[in-house]
Amino acid sequence: MPTLTLDLLREKLKEWKGIGIAKNANPVLGEGNEKAEIMFIGEAPGEQEDKQGRPFVGPAGKFLDQLLEGIGLKRSDVYISNVVKFRPPENRDPTPEEKEACMPWLQAEIAIIKPKIVVPLGRHALGHFFTTLSISAAHGKAQVLRRAQDDRDSMYVFPIYHPAAALHNPGLRQALIDDFAGLKAFLATQKK
Ligand code: URA
Image (cartoon, rainbow, N blue to C red; front, side):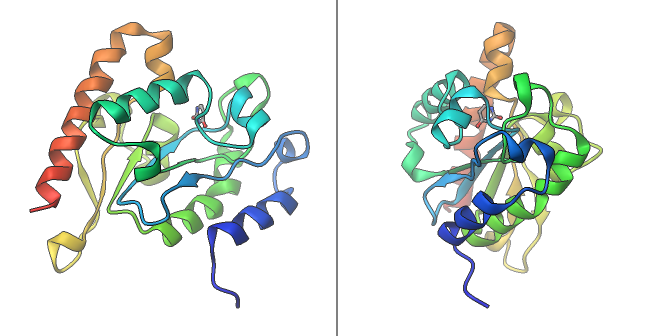
């Protein structure tokens, strides 16, 4: 079996037609630093992402870039992906079937990157890890996903609202800024 790499995944995703929306949309795998300690996971590509074949390059992506900058991170420091790898028409919510069918792609990315912290952006990505947690209750708090013997090797989930939610609901903007500050503080505790 060839070693699983992001390039190989990207090639395979181009051929994959496992869900209906894959027939009319462009594949969008994650991108970023292959050695990233933090992996951000959104919902599904939107219009710009579909056009460019890259995650988070539209208005929500611009806001994500600002939030990253605000805590001293660049896109090239992190890895950014989505639960669903194709744009749902009219940006509708992805269906449970689409999320489930795309799950192996995200799992493969996580296996390659091996992030220390995954940051689900919004409820769809949070649901990939914890089916019973709501984003309004869970955002801004680290959860242990896998506890390692040496705590420093544990893997954490740090849920945050989706940046697009703040574009529709300006009241959430500050919550996002605060949660990114919380993420920065959590990262600092991991470096000790
Ligand atoms: N929203 C998402 O969830 N993902 C993207 O890539 C862009 C917008």
